[in-house]
Image (cartoon, rainbow, N blue to C red):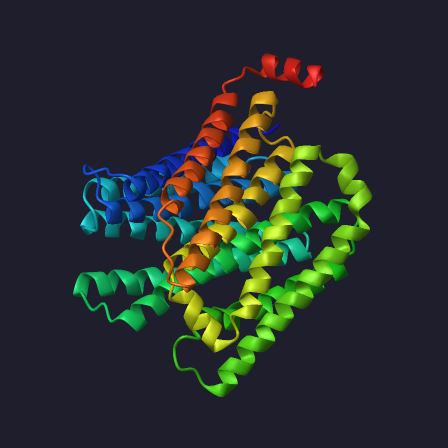
Length: 414
């Protein structure tokens, strides 16, 4: 177990607990009352910290670890300044949003986060060329950091809009979705895809097969952004391109499923049951995501979906929690990158149950909104779901307090 990686992942998990706490507070305020906090500021801090403090921190750490596995033994010492800069910027953004709201401080910390992403992209791209052989995983990693850089254009435009107060609704939403798309479907997705391919190559999976999956998804990524903008008037050729992108994604998904099915025996042998279960849930969530995207090519459905907040929130949480977070938890537990004991497993099960409940309740709330039928009971239920996630991730963080000797003892008992 790499001690540097373990420390950074444990910090990332602690950050995930903070995100769950903020989510629980927001749900409590909606369901009941909490006059001492500003919901909008809390939401902004929650969103930015989820991206920088949890996902980016964890993925950067895991990507650096692949360099260690490829022979760069000093990778973590070299990347430590970048990782600390991102962590500092994430906490700065969180605290400034929660206690001050949008201000010059939040702009400065957001700029620092972007600077850290550029710094990481430059170093990692160079090190990939030096330490990693040409492969599908290396291509996916390069795509990930490139899309992370591209997404920053949305941040700069949003900051300009906020400063100048030029918040024209359509332009504002299109910019928000630009940033979200290249974070969710670019940086996060391709980093996870690269990590998966990195392991599959170790199992002897054909790099040629994996390369075809990568190419299908990467070609589709940029035009797929317009799936989030079909509520705007778009040219016919652009609509055709979006439909083609959806088709490419579905073919890429099918090819990936076939590869995973062919190597099921090896995966079952090497991964513990909980990690396999989390991975299957992540694949199921990815499947639902792609099917929802396929449905959204119908303009009337796209306008309908993006017009109801619970549906948008449900979709974003499906990707953030169902696809990406569950994959990361599956990856780090399956490869024993953090200590895993009975308490860890119990916490992950509770956290996962909270994710499922959250998605279920958001789906019900979204459907009821479509029929303009309010269900007041859903807000308390959503609070229960977020509290369940909070209880689960706090349990996971607590489990990491086990000493190494105690951890080995627990493993021997199980």
